[in-house]
Amino acid sequence: MARHASPEPLVSFEKVSTIFHVGPHVLCVSKLREGRWTCTVDEGAPSSSFMTQAEAWEAGVREADRLDRAANAP
Image (tube, rainbow, N blue to C red; front, side):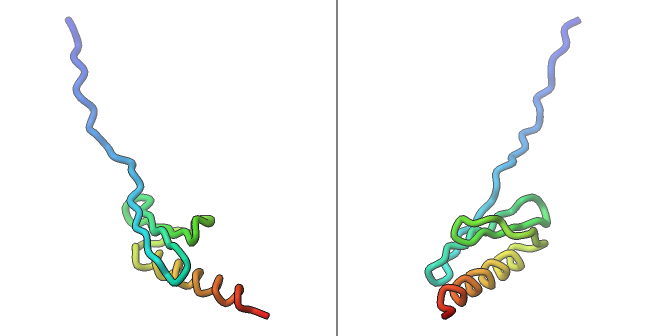
């Protein structure tokens, strides 16, 4: 008796990312999985994860502001 394999469901593991420009900085907000988002600023290390895209974006904007202040510090 021949066994027929049933097709496996297609699951996409593509990262969903959105790019934002904040002054001279580039923020990339990415969905890691449902309810988990992260952000990178200028292709740096990813931030910790957040529950919403808005929280990740806010963290990225704060980091961009921090980088601007550090660059302008005496």
